[in-house]
Each structure stands twice: as structure tokens, then as C-alpha cells.
Amino acid sequence: MELFLEDVKRRKTFAAGLTGLTVLALALGTSIPLAFAKLAESVPLLALFIGVEGGELGASAIFIPAGMAFITLFCLVLEAFALGYEKSSARKILLNQTPSVRTDLFYTFLRISGFFMIFAILFSFGWLYVAVDYVKSEFDFAILKHTDSILLQYVTLVVVQSFAIYWAHRFLHSRFLWEIHQVHHSAEELNILLPYRNHPVDFIIATLYGTAIATALGADPVTTMLWLGSNAVYQSFVHSSYDWKWQWLEYIFITPAVHRIHHSDAPEHYNSNFGILSIWDRLFGTYVPPTGETLNYGVPDQGNFNTDKFFSEMVACVWRWIGLKRHTTDPTIKAAS
Image (spheres, rainbow, N blue to C red):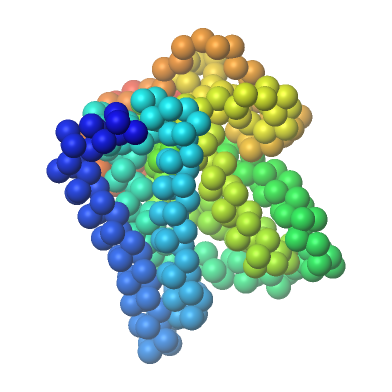
């Protein structure tokens, strides 16, 4: 606690600014979707264009930003207690020593502020929600509606969603989408904020298949919220420096030590450990166990990232993706063939 107070005193201007930006992000995360919701209610053509009713958008505005902020704060505090403040993500963020951490903060504020959600709605021209409605009408398996057990629904949702995440993650590492996904892998150090460090296009893909699966299975809203909350906590900790003390968990989950292999810049570690449940990586031959060696993180195109030019980096990824901008290095070296 003394070290934390010393860091706050030493970085009081930054700490105050960080607090202010968090409050601003929460305010924007609530007000922007609510404004869109009001506009969608009064302009039917807009509601048709974005493919979502104003009430649905307004409801999400209340819970999503506050939920993300709470889970992030909860994970930061829990990791600091478990790992020790000196080695924690909280100290890395507070000291703010590297461009990589500043980039993590930028994407975290974008997510909490609701920018990604609005971008997903507008960029998809309504197809994001049209696709979900199509899945519901044509592939409405609704198997989870046949049981009232929240536990059974949750376990089923975890297994199905983790299977989808495994293959979607492998697809993000393909030559087609690696240019977008390497925003996440360009982090030079791992911390609690890293799950938020994703390009908006990456976010759209995750939102599309995640929502479609939950809808098709007929998941109860409570079960869906439990899945989203627990997955957010898991994603935060799997990117942390904390090592789970029970190694037998590696037979069930991709643990932080195993996931660090996934972020390694060593060629022998490329395209490994994609999942949440380790069974999928073991089953499909992509599981690589941790060896205890010191790892470095980043991507071959590292010169394009962590420059403190956050928006230009984001836009440049799209230009390289569609072939309008040259690469500094071979962009496919870390992508699956």
C-alpha cells in the first residue's frame, strides 16, 4: 500500500487525468448510445439502417460501459493482491512508462466510451443485427430453452462459445485477417487491459459470432450475462503476469503461462494456444506447453505500432488490410498459411 501511495503521489497529475478520462469514458459510453437510441426511435429509417431498435441500444448503454469499468477495476485490484502491487498491471498503468501501455489505455477508453459499439453498428450497415436475426429465425436450435438450470445452460454456453472462439481466433491469424488482429499482438508487454486492445473490425467479428451463437442456442439473459462477465474476467487474467498455482488447470483451461506462448514473437510459437478450454488446442494440434523460458512479445510489423499515434495506427491497419499501404515487413510471417 505504501508503494502504491508513493506512486500516486509521484504521478498525481497522471492519476488525476486517468480518473478524469475514466469518468468521461463512462459518461460517453452511456450518453452516445442513448442519443443513438433516441434518434433511432424518432427516425425509423435510421433504425432500419442500423438494424437495431432504440430500446435495445438504450438498454445496452446502461450496463455495458459500467460493467466493463467495474470488471477492469475488479481485476486490477485482485491481481495486485494476488501478484503483489510491485509486479501488477496497476503499477504498469500508473507509471505509464511505455508506448505499449499507453496504447492499451487508448483502446480501453474507446471500448468503455461506446465508440466500438457505435462503430460496429454503423460499419456493418445493420448487417450485424440482421445476421443475428437470420440465425435466430433459420437456426433457432434453442436447446437451452429446454432446461431451467442456469448451471447447465452456462456450461453448455461455455463449451460451444469456446469452440467458436477457438476457430474464430485461428481465422484472425489467417492471412486474410492478420493485418487487423496484429493490433492485439503488437503489445510489447502483457497486462489486464490487453483484452481491450483490439481493432474495431476485430470487435465486429467477435460481436457477430458471439451474439449469433447465444441467440441460436436460446440462452437465458442471466446465463448470457454470466458468460460475458466470467469471460471478461478470464480474458483479463489470462493476459496478466499472474501464474495459476494449480498446474492441473492447464488440462482444462489455457492458463496465463500457456497464453503467453501465444503472444510470443518466437517463430516456433506462432499459431498456438488459441482457445479458452485447452481441449480444443490439444484436439486440433495447436497446443504448446509453457517451458518457463523468458519470452518477448510483439509482431514482425512492430514498427507500425506503439508510436503514440493511436488513430493513425488504427486507420493504417485498414489501408494495409485492403492493400492501399505498403508493409514495413512481411505481414504474413506470423499468420497461418
